[in-house]
Length: 108
Image (cartoon, rainbow, N blue to C red; front, side, top):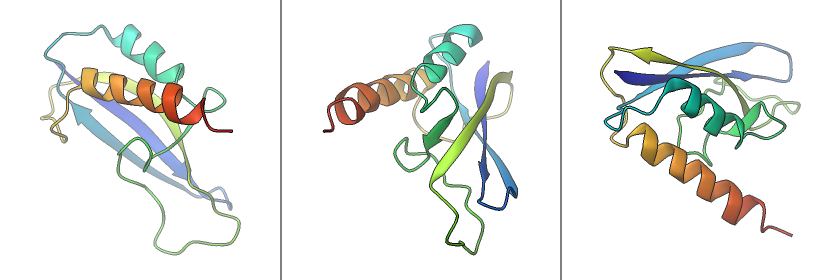
């Protein structure tokens, strides 16, 4: 089965825009393993910048001065929906791990 990653953007006024991405899972990585891998790469265990993770940004059409770039991770789930990205969930997990360990943790 494929993996659906659910996330949202909450603007500075607390309005929310929800979205999801579906990855193929040819390696059959267990859902709990995927969830734990994502959680370990989030900012404060909850946030990420969608552009940094190569995910679609969920911003509203108009941006206010109190808005920000952070998106919130909600969950992952099994799905029969077709994948919406060419990369697999394993590719994605490797990418966010490398991004955090090489780029974020080595930035002064």
